Length: 165
Image (cartoon, rainbow, N blue to C red; front, side, top):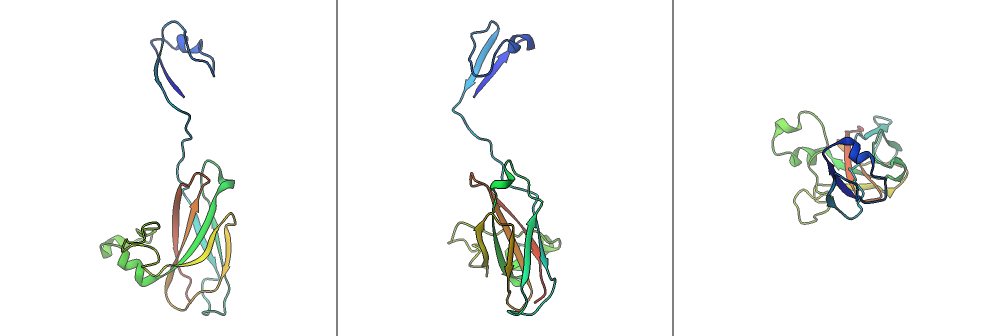
């Protein structure tokens, strides 16, 4: 990749893709190795059906959708269950938890007090391309998290309250 600088647009028009100047009045401002800009997936939703059921007996269907990424087809998804009590422990203040959103969970540092397994998280579905999962859940109030990861390793997630079990 090359950043070019010129005093007039016409000078840049004379540069063809794949070649470096010499073109009069064009200066090479910077040259870099090839790179791929990558933003983490964003905008996803998580839905669950039915909205209530019995522990172990009811099969809940989890679906994630509405993700945006440079290559949607390359996204992998993982899904998790958390007891609702851990949701409130993860926020520093009760006011921050008034509007439900993905709490500050640490997904990578196992020594962190916010590490997903330390705050009661359980894997419902390991990483795969499928945006669906059929699971049974333990009794109690809970919230669910889906994480999306692209082929370059960028990750993000979203959460949903429930279902009632």
